[in-house]
Image (tube, rainbow, N blue to C red; front, top):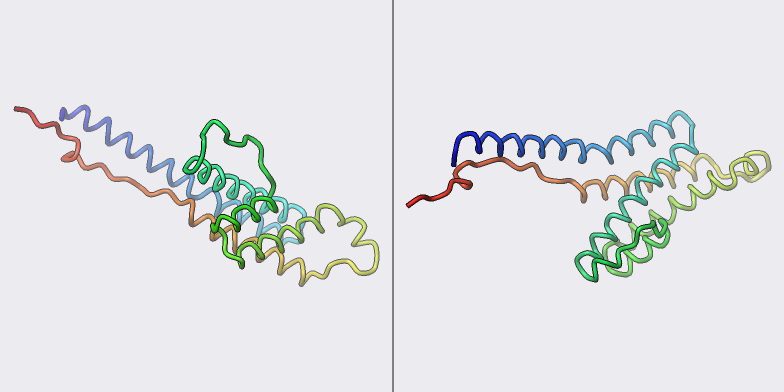
Length: 167
């Protein structure tokens, strides 16, 4: 292989690995952002941010599953929603019963925060900080597990593999 081609390929590998590191850091950054919002008592932002991460991860899993098992022209363009994904992924055996339960508990906490916050915090019987905290922690736990599923590997260039044999 010519030297200039080797350099080009090495650069491509470097660029790929740089992008891989960025991709692998997206979910942990967003999860940490949600955790920081929760600690600072910005519960709405925390639940919404984490719900977006989880829904994106589940949508991505669903698309990958469909690509490997069905007609690629029928891939859904819109999200099916966290609860629907939890049910589907549990039925196909991708999620454990515990993971499904954690997702549903998180979604329940998210719904309380998003839909009922103003009413619940003005009347007696609003959800306790302990309940919301537990539901949020379950969401964080499952998002971290999913993040590990999505990690892309780094690749290293070996010029010997790319050398062409000449006669």
